[in-house]
Amino acid sequence: MEKYFALFFDCLSSCSNGNQLVELTQNCRQGTVAIKFDSKMVEQNLIQAGLAIQLHTFDQIDSTNAEAKRVGQQTGRITQPQVFIANHQTGGYGRLNRDFYSPKDSGLYVSFLIPIAAENFNPGLLTTMTAVASVEAIEKHFPVRLQIKWVNDLILANRKVGGILAEAITNPVTNQIIGVVIGIGVNLSTTNFPDELQKVAISLSNRPDAKDQTAFVNDFITNFFNHLETYQTGDFMTQYRKKSSVIGHHVRVQFQNNTVTGVVSDIDDDGALLLQTDNQKLKITSGEIIHVRPINE
Image (cartoon, rainbow, N blue to C red; front, side, top):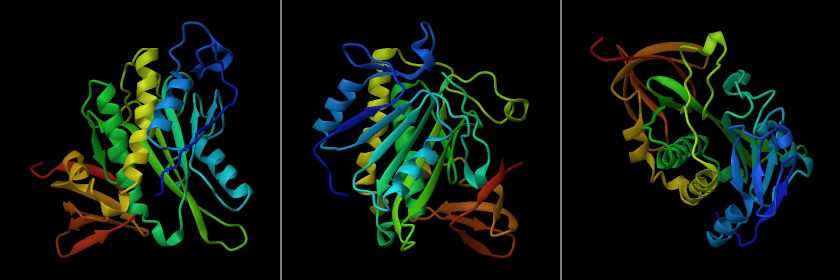
C-alpha cells in the first residue's frame, strides 16, 4: 500500500491542553487510569514515518468497528486510512456478534479503516498480521509474553487478553469490497470482569505512564501500518507460528456448521489451520477453536 505524507486529527469528545495531551476519559476526571497520549507527538512520529492517518478519539461510543463501518459506507469510497480509538464501548462486539466487554478507563479499543480492493483482500493473512503486530507492540511496552490462539485471540496465561475482528466494507451500489475494518480490543487494566468471563479473560494488569502511553499508542498504530505494507507476502508467519498457542495441541474446531477434533499440525502461509483428525487432514480457513489441550493429556 502506498504511504502517504500528511496527517489529520479529529479528536472528538476529548480533552487537551497546550501540549495536546489527549485524555480519553469522561469529563477528564483527575486521577483516573484512562489512556492518555500526546497527539502532537503521535502526529509528528507518524508524519516522519510517511503515514497519512485520520485519527478519531472518543470518550464513549457504541463500537469503534461500527463507527468505522459507518464512516466507510457514507460515501461509498475510502480514500485514506483512518483510526478510531475509544475509552469505552457500550456495544463492543467480536466474532458472530458476541459482546466484547469494553469498560471505561481500562482498555485499548481501536479500529483501523483501510481502503483495499477486493482483489487485494486476503482476510486470513490480514487477521494473522494484525495479531503479530499487536503482540509486538504490547510486548514492547508491557512485561508480558503473549500467545496467539488461531485466528483472532491474544492469550496471556491461558486466558484471553485481547481479540481481533476484521470486517469487509462494500459499496452500497456495486456491492464490491472497497475497504476493511480491523478492530482490536485489549484488556489493559480491567479487573471486574462479569461472572461469565472471570475464568476465561485476563488483563495486562498495569499501564505505562502518560509519556510511555504516547509511545505505546504510536507504536501500536505504526507497527500495524508497517506490517500492512507487505502483509500479502506473509513475511510475519514465522513469528505467528512461534506465538501460536495451538500448534501441536488437541483442539476442537467449529466451522461451516460442523465441529471437528484433531491435532493442529501447522498454520499454513495463508493463515489457514491445518488439522489432522483421526482419518483426514483438513485445511480450515475460517472458524473458531473452542477447546485446546496439550497432546499428552
